[in-house]
Amino acid sequence: TYRENDSLVHLALAETESYKYMFFDVAHIIGDGITMNILMEDLKKIYDGEHVDKETFTFYEYILDHEADQKAGGEQRDVAEVARLMEGNRLTRTALLRHDRQDCSKGVYNVIRRRLDRIVRKQILYYCKMNNVSENALFLAAFNYTLALFSNEDDVFVNSIHSGRTDGRFAGVAGCIFRTYLCRYQRVAHEKVNDLITKTGKQIMNTMKVRTSVSCMGAMFLQYQGDILSV
Image (tube, rainbow, N blue to C red; front, top):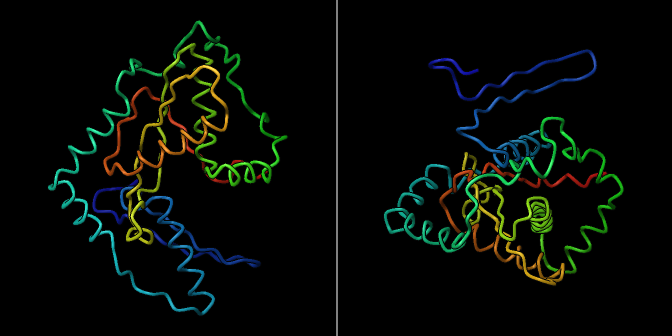
C-alpha cells in the first residue's frame, strides 16, 4: 500500500547465510511487466561487468510522441478503427453470465485445471511457426471459438493486452505503456482451423496499431503470458 508522499519505487537488499537477495517494488503506474524485464536485463549486465547504455528514447519522449499523435487526430483515428472492428456486434456484457449454460453457483464446468498437461509445447511452437502466427493468436482464436460454442453466439469478442511497444523506438522504454485491445470472432461455416488462426493473427496485428486502450467491454479478459505451455 502506497502512502501519501511515498516513493513509487522501493529497493531492498537482504542477505542470508546462503544467498543475497534484491527486492524491487515498482508501482504499476510507472512500470509494467516489460519494464521489469528491462530492469532485470540491465541489472544482470551490471553484475556481469558489461556496459549499460543510457536510454536514447525515454518514457518522457514517449509521452511527447503520444501527445503529438493525439493532437494530429490519433484519438479519432483509433476510435474509428475500433468502431470498424466491432461494427454489428451486439454483445454488451460477458457471455459467461449465461446461467443457462452452466451451474455458476456450484462452479460446474468452470474448472480447466490440468486440462493442458498433455500438450507438447514444441508441437505448438512448431505449428505456429509453420503457419506464421504467434502463440498469442492461437490462444485468442481458440478462446473466442470456445466462448462462441459455450454461449451459443456467432459473434463474440475478448479483451487482451500487449506491451504497447509496437514502434521500434519504444522497445527499450521503461514505463507503464501497455495497451488493451479487442479480439473479435465471427463464426464462419466450415472454416478451417488454419484460416481462423491466420485471420485472428492479422486482426491482432492491425488492432495493435491502435495507440488508445479500449475499455474492458463485456468483462472478458485473456492474456497469454508466454510460459503457459512450459509443462
